[in-house]
Length: 344
Image (cartoon, rainbow, N blue to C red; front, side):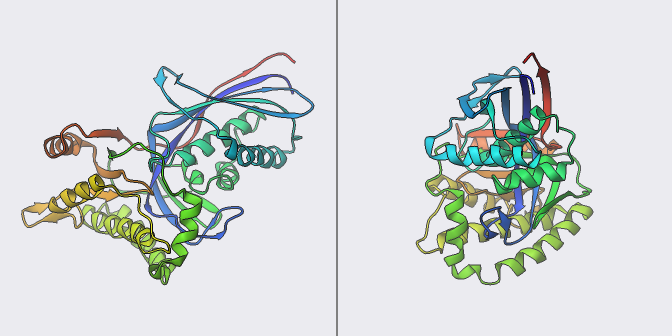
């Protein structure tokens, strides 16, 4: 195979029904189904260059700009290098390519990594798609690419389709929805790295007394949410998302030993949203169209109709002056931006 250079982008996704707990940690088989919204511009952009070589060599460099977009460079810590090399081997072997070549990765995010906006999901989805594109397999079924990517990072399998994606056991599928365009307004409370990584969190939640019955509750919520999407019921969406997000974080708070991703500001934001009726779809003054959720991090996601974004921006700027808000729309999943093939 001759020299190849590809560029891909893969979006983050925000789960409304959470992926938490595994029945097989080696290949990331979840204990329960999850349901997410694929985003668009909160994404990872990855350049991957391949040159023929008899041995395998991985070079990694954080990118600061691509496609006219400023990126936050993603570095590769030495402790993570074996995991990345295993993922390269996994994808190469799947497509029948030997474990060789000189691979140069340049990658970055449009959002802060490690702060609970699923940078692992977008990062592994981008890397998986980039390797497959180098190998001439970019047209492989999305279900196959998602299954490969899932083995590197579980939630990355949801970043190959969209906007609404159900992940159940080893498969993913897109869902129909009656909702119109939705924005994800992210209240960026902190940008620091998580003190407890996702892998450890998946293990610790099993020690919480709230884990008993968790899988059954989630299956019922998935059924409810599937109906809610079809019916486009904002009040029910608000209630379900709040209930699920709070339960996930209570698993963290009641684990042995307990841990928390929340800061004092996270709690302030959640209390403000409760006062606005965001936990139940409205107040005595009337309904509100908003659904609140959090990933494993301190930041708060507000899912709102596109036409209501300015209203919620004004509310937050008035209540929390200077707080940073990120905004994104609904996406369709990872995509190849360019492929260049050169000489030997």
